[in-house]
Length: 83
Image 1 (spheres, one colour):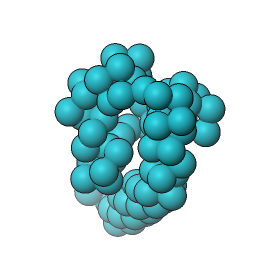
Image 2: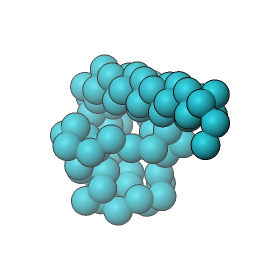
Image 3: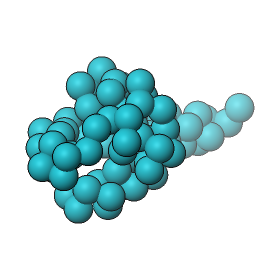
């Protein structure tokens, strides 16, 4: 492997890690608003999860911050609740 390729791969890895951390911080920021909006709309996790395309267990893990959703599903979740 050429030296320049190694640096590019290292730079790419650092950028991916930074994007993941930024996504994690964004999700954590929106969690309280998403939960409040779900409650306000009288939706249960069991009702909302299929609308997003995930299991209720998965949505529960996201809502508690124990797992972080992929960006596309996070966007769908926010869109469905208008957050």
